[in-house]
Length: 481
Image 1: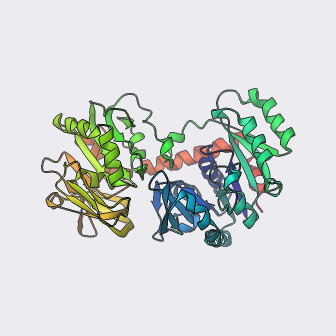
Image 2 (image 1 turned 90 degrees about the vertical axis):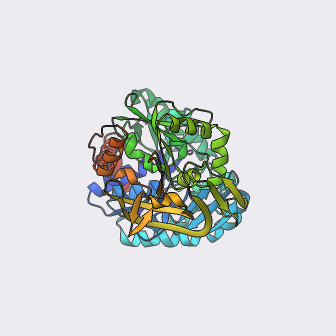
Image 3 (image 1 turned 180 degrees about the horizontal axis):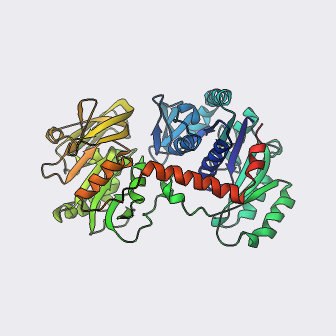
């Protein structure tokens, strides 16, 4: 065995989840297996053990394999900073920022590091399961492609196409993809599968057989909707939704236009006593919220303007007057201060922006990026927290004299005089069960005692069971060459 690639007939068809499930299924068969995604576009990044950053989905897939995440698992990471530009991270380190129209010129130089990372993984593991990006049907992007068929052909990896029946038109998705593919690209496709089916799969038998007959591709099954998917970390901001609980005390999170590293929310969403509400553009912050979270952002000053455009600054002031609490994480922490200065234009146009003024601190954006997995001690409770930092900028001011935590003996974060407003650069806080329970107790929320790490592991096993029950997993893994 060597490698297998899952590509999609479109974005958000469930490729990341399919790869995670296949990774866990292969591991349970006794194979050493690793995930790989040549190119990812996401502002939800994970810090790796080798000191870089990769897409959050690849970190989850690494967990499914029983591995620590490393940069080779996602050698090219694009982090959107505006509607037309993105930061380019190569093998874990920032290379440059480019406009979308200029990225095509850069792509040819990125295939060598992609293949280098892939070959390193291939030499270490029995099997590498590869995730594509977007869709190979986007033939306008085919020249210099490193994410889908360009990679598959360069690395000689067989492809299985996944279609999403939940969005409708799946027959056209699969057959249409074959129609527009280059003949040699189409030869890389070994088969297809249908994802996210709701109801009785037998009702799709005729459509399934039509796809087989029209394409000549082998079908690997119809996968019903996986109801436990919300318990696994989401990578795409488009997947962000409020928690499943309709009862419980409300915690609200603002969905910024450039929201980043929002995996902080996953453990809260799983808490039975928490009603997590994602507040989106045009919506008001719920008046009954005990806590409002300002999450990370890839563009702090840009999202400050976005926040004010929604009127959330007024809502936040009213929230505090009602006795509510605010937690700002990373970019959200920077927004809580009195000023954010970016004299070099690192995150956008150079300049200064007034902050919300809820913390007496100021932030200066600097070129240096803090990227580290850390162990911290929460100042108020003395509890240990494993987390990570991934940010630019230095934050200083009087409220730093009341730190949120300590990291390697240095003070971290800031707390307002009345204790109602907290800012921290630490991501991943709520994955620490004891800390999460203590923090929620301060808000009057009874924690459930859930072991979040065990919950994720159990859900990955359930995902693998789900694939085994409905797909020809043996046949899929047998395709690897």
